[in-house]
Length: 233
Length: 237
Image (cartoon, rainbow over all chains, first blue to last red; front, top):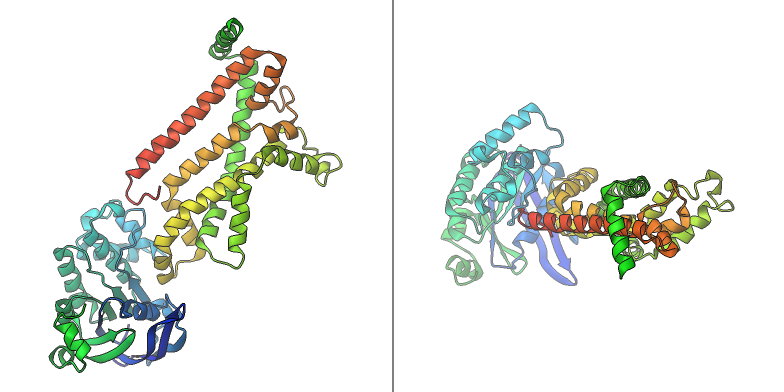
């Protein structure tokens, strides 16, 4: 479990594709708990940073280190904007990500599905779920792996409001206290509701990193002010 | 015209009265097709799934060769297998030439690339959707290949049916390696070629009707499955 003592350090992290730099020499020091929201306009580099943190992308230079804890690559779970659902039942989707299926894990899977409002659909073909239900299933599937870091890439984009409410409620009440969460969103109001700290990215550069309260009350850069006021998106 | 009508009626008689010779030929055809498609599927589906979901140095070359092999001329395959299994060939000591076993081997060489490449195409599109998910959860390679096969099981049924269609209608390779020996290696296609050349049109037509019916049923089944799977959530065809 991630703790307050754990620090996630990002040192001179860069990422290029075909000669184009998508993330410039990024340096950050983040707490091992709470919700860090990555904010920024389209194409700013939020998802790139999230995928680098997940290990899905390899940085061109720099490193990410976890200090003061036992965080390793095996303790991260990533949920993408487009829910990836296997062609099998809801329950089997949950169990697929486990290395070993035990009776405890099966019980936990059912409990998580119940928390996500999917308990009555556990034997249903998961591909027939609604967009919101699919995303809730993806979140429950991520949690069952017991990750120390949960990385969510716009998990509530394009889903119905009741699913968004359920996911936010679940993250705040059940997950926040025990895990580090990285959350990418375009929704300023959602960021206000969820964030403990904000990392604001603009054209591949982290230009602000502060507590959510500071960021929304006293943004330091004009880009952040414009973003908060909805002038750039 | 009269001769053809008579031959057609006579062929229907052979089918309706379950002529022993006709049945023997049909059963051997189905047996060879069954084993050839079974072996091709066991080898070709996992290989296609592996190639579609794995990137290694010479992958594109391997895939290009396999796609090229989809159009292998059957007579060339027949000649190649004949040379290997003939008395002076490298595997001549096995004494398999002119046996159903060597016919199955020739059929596997022809069908395996088809099964492998069609599987590759189906699973490649699934891989685009799944690979990031598998990587983020560090799913083992074997488990992911099995998942690709399981999740494209409906589409892969049509691959197997395509293999059956190719196998049962093949004549060029198996006539060379099987020799079309009566009661031993005579199958529907080779028998049709022989009986037609002899002027024995009723048996040739009878076998032709069965072969045609098999092809129609198989293709109908493929279309039925395709229509059914298109309605299935997550369909990739």
